[in-house]
Image (cartoon, rainbow, N blue to C red; front, side):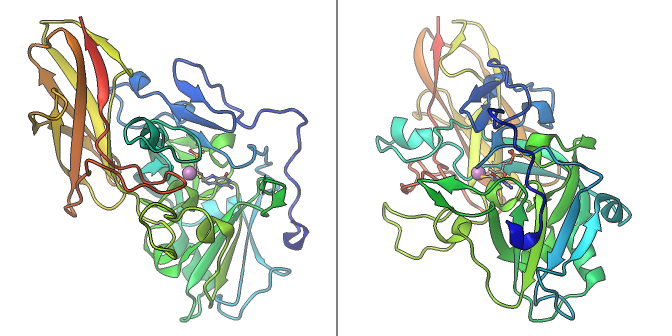
Length: 376
Ligand SMILES: Nc1nc2c(c(=O)[nH]1)N[C@H]1C(S)=C(S)[C@@H](COP(=O)(O)O)O[C@H]1N2
Ligand SMILES: [Mo]
């Protein structure tokens, strides 16, 4: 986008969209997207290692130079106002001189669980057919966006911030939609938004936004723009196709004009292979995790008999806005095929429903997933 004067991402002919290794025992590879396998999650490890974190790319991972990197900030919402042609510029070093914050949060794609609209509810939705692996919990490191914005100075009537990535423009169906970008309210910017350069104590991997990405804790993954090139701060509501066309609930029973999606719903997953083979008659401890974009998890109920009976799972670890681990002892698995169910409730009282509200793009599949196991 010449208007921002940004260097084009290094174009590597025939290069893969995702640069890190995607071994099939750890990932399901969808090309530009890859989901983590829940059966490969180590129950003793709370954070998701960056090497195992899901990747969701609209385009392809650009290779950016940390020394030439700069974040551009402009807009009529800044004190004094700044045009896109004459933005404020911050190098990575400038940003790292500001007070550093670490925060642990769930990181999740809006479409996580999408395949279950088809397999569990009989109505397919369009988009990557994730199971539940487009999620992780990461300890991000960076500077609060509010720290930077307060230093720059905001106008009192600033309402909207648009984050734009440095990856190539997104072209779909022959239409160039421009660079991946999405606006969010100034209130979120001044609350817990983070400009992150690190994950789990190391610099971001290229696939996850190196050298700098935005993190909007608890919000849909698309809000956390990777390879952050610019922030526009505005006195009027900014828009982009990522909040007007995509990432809102359309079709199904949703009225037209439902708002752009923000806070993630409640979900749960078992740390088991799909159709996990289990030994009959032998007690086994099963583990899983539950999370919510709104609040910590208060309770997890599980059913080992397809939903006929329920009991409380034992809750384990939780850090900050990260997920909650849990376990349940299955004393006497009987031979046959069973469905395991886990239903979480967060501290705002939000509970996973039996059926997720259908929408054309398959966002927010938050229903209790029926996880098959085979006991023999
Ligand atoms: N610049 C840019 N930012 C982006 C995206 C993208 O394609 N380009 N994908 C978004 C989506 S849809 C998600 S779910 C998360 C995925 O982050 P990850 O690949 O680091 O897991 O990044 C978001 N930020
Ligand atoms: Mo996403």
